[in-house]
Length: 294
Image (cartoon, rainbow, N blue to C red; front, side, top):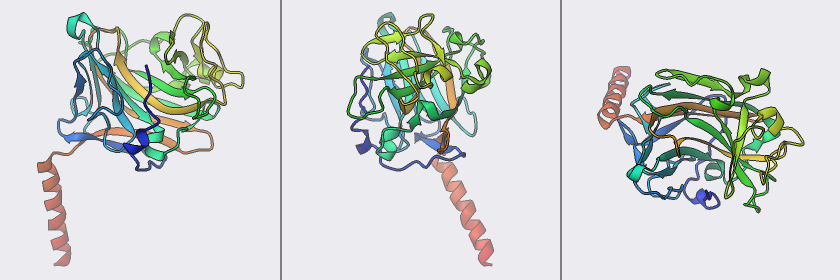
């Protein structure tokens, strides 16, 4: 899968200041929110019309075969919404896929959020409906550049978290708060690597705890994997479902990533209030102002 990130700064230019409080990412549409989909077998990219979630740096990406992703009010978490993720078998029996991804460059103009060696906080909330046929849950991926140089593009990939590689059950019909540093006695959850243009390294021995990936020597999955280590740079965060899963229905919210000695980035997905609600809020404010003048 190719990543179209070098030109994203033209899509969104507003700066997101990292802090301990969550930045709200609003849907593009009023309630019930967004439902971005794509019926073809070709994955969408961040420059697809409608893929940008406002100017937040988040994008609906890698959507194909009738997968659906969107900030929606069907499964609210910390407010009136969350990022809904759905997959089906798709046309012709092809399994669908849908992701929502944050690209740091799109907001700040700079690729790097921080290094793997400085990564200190990583968490998100996920919900899986019991009607899902798929055994998986919505996964979290770190978008990583091996050497941390913007000028080289063939050394990038994902580090992927799934409970299946951490001997943890996949719960249904409830929100799960996932702290990836709570695994392996604080050494961090086991992650496996995807190398763009090469494929997955998710076989036994290739998944390692965060502490191994973020060590000075790092880890290199065999064969032909990338070496990710303490100096490797995180360019963004991805969450998604599908690609061989079958049917899935769920959501994610409250994504948080932080680095030692640097700000914490946290996002809460919410639905834009309906125009009628916004009008009522405005009228209430006007009434309050009149009372103050009296």
